[in-house]
Length: 211
Image (cartoon, rainbow, N blue to C red; front, top):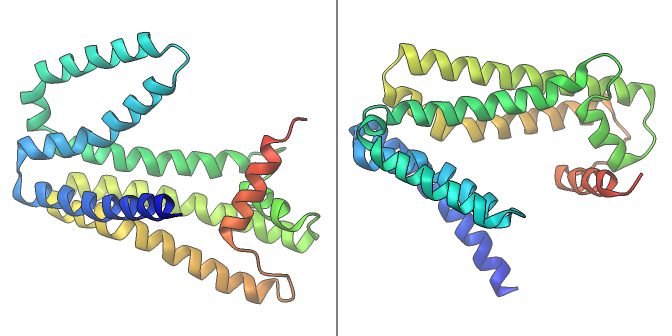
């Protein structure tokens, strides 16, 4: 129990400290620190994937070679560290956009419909329509986030983009969650409430079952 609490406290600390530090480097143009902070998430993810790979030795070797290449190109990375921040942010928005959007293609089940079915079982036609509309809303939202990120990065000062990326992205996501919940309580009155985490657990369990 204590380990679990400590782990979540560490995660919370990182989620608070990283955007603050990233914004500081964008605002002050601390290029050396900015480059290090910008590549830190990629380096951590790459290290974890390499360590967990079935070809660990090969992947770790490639990771070492990548680190050598980064060291050789460090001056260029310092000069363009803001671009690294932006690419990470816009890539995440585009990945989420495609994750939701591709399920709207004819013949596929919208992602939010799959979440709802995992949480509630058989859905009514009205609930299915609503879930599809929610999937559309999230698709449009992430497309708008990616577009806004690009416009601010290329047309506004780096510090302005940084405020949007580091301090407004998560609150905007949370705001859409809250708005969707309030709309759902009105549109689907009488439907037992289901929390997002419960739906995700049910969906993950359903996907993990052998077919």
